[in-house]
Length: 288
Ligand SMILES: [Zn+2]
Image (cartoon, rainbow, N blue to C red; front, top):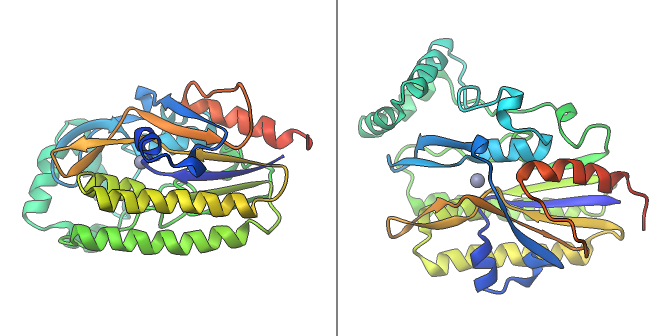
């Protein structure tokens, strides 16, 4: 069998239900809980203290079937810069629980740009293909966390929420075109990822129209993919966590993710690491 994965960062189960987004729901769908090994205590872009599932760790567990601590991957090892001193300082800040003070000081003094110049931009963290279910499989990757550059975009300090959301919409449109083209090409596993719903959810959960626009776009894309999907292909729609209201207009990660499949099956993921062995099993299955 071939496997096509549509990964929508932050796709919320309850909104799929509420707005009856049937293309996203497919034949079977549900929620799965995110293990605590994929959570971190951190400070969000607004300077709030948060403890929630962390995107790079959840996708690492999805791709490898292992929890990040089994791979020695954590907040320390991700988002590093060229400067060794800057990395050392970062480890110190995380270790002593100072990130809340540091992020607020950095924002207050508008230091982001100068830090990027002195210490180098944050490097995109990656894991080797050999550690993932893509090993020895003919694959296509479109913008996937821990495998691709640019899945999370950098913005200069002071970029407005409107500009950030707009830029992610443009990225979504470009990636959608790439995806629809790639469907016709030869692969055993195709991975597609977009951060649009995560960004809109976090910055504008309270703005129903903005939220609906993004969710209907995701549902539309899934509909188009199904139309062009080669025969004998399993379509997996998945998110790394959902989204709940936070401080009125904003959103915050939930402790569960969404999944759905285009096949009838009794199988259900109990946790994020369950997908890895199942994907290998499916891809090794001869056509049924
Ligand atoms: Zn995420």
